[in-house]
Image (cartoon, rainbow, N blue to C red):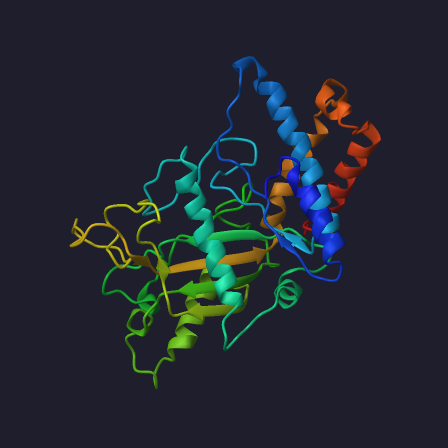
Length: 323
C-alpha cells in the first residue's frame, strides 16, 4: 500500500471489517519522485515526510506489524540498492515492482506449505516482541550460486539485498537481537551438499547456510522445491551471466537459450535493531517540519497537536529498537 494517504484508510478498513485478525502490512516507497516544477521540490519533499509520519503512526496502531518496501536505500532519496546479477530500468515500475513482488510471493508461498503451514499470528509471534512492530525484508534474487556449486562449500555465501528503505546492507556488529524467517526456493538436493546424507544431512546443511545469511538469528525456515518462475510476462531484468535456470555461469559463458525461465532464491524477513532504522529516518525528517507552512495538511484538518502526537508515537516505537 502507498504511504501517501492510503495506508491509514486501509488500516482502518481492515480493523473495522476484521477486528480479531492479525495483519501484516507492506507500505511502498517509490524509488523516484517527480515534481511538477523544480522549485516545488522542497515543498513536495515536506509532504512526503508528513505523509510517512502519519502512515507509520497508523501502521503502529492499526496493524500487527508492518514492513516498508522499496528498491531505494532511503525512504526519501533516490539512491538505488545494489542488486548483483540484475540489470533493470530503475524508472520503469514494471521492473522495480517485479523485484519486490518475487520475494513477497516467496514469503506467502512459505507460509502456505501444506506440510508446514504457518499462520500470520505464529510468524509475528516469533519475529516481534517488546513492542517492536517494524520488520525488514531481504532478498537474494537470484541466489547467486554458480553452476556445479553447492552451498555447503560456498564459503562467501550469497548477497542478501535489503528491500526495506533505511535498513543498512550490513547489520550492526553489536546487534544480537536479530530474529528471522527465511524461505529458500528452487534448490535441488545436488546444489545443497555433495556429501552422502549419512555424513551431512541436506536439511542441516541448508539450515546452517541460511542461518549464516541471517546473522545466526534464524528462527524459522521453509524450503520450497519449485523455483520462482521468471519466463514471460516476467520482465527481463537478469544479467547476462544468469543461466536459463537461474544459476550463475562462469568464464563469460552465454545462455544457450534466450531469457531466464526460473531462478533459485533466498528471502528473509527479520526483526532487529537495523529494522528500526527507517523509523529514525522518519523521525529526523518529521522533526524538521513546520506544519504551519504545509497549507494542504491544514486544509485537510490535521492540527499541529495531532501531528506531534503521531510523531511521538513513532518515537516510542523507535525506542523499542534501541539496545
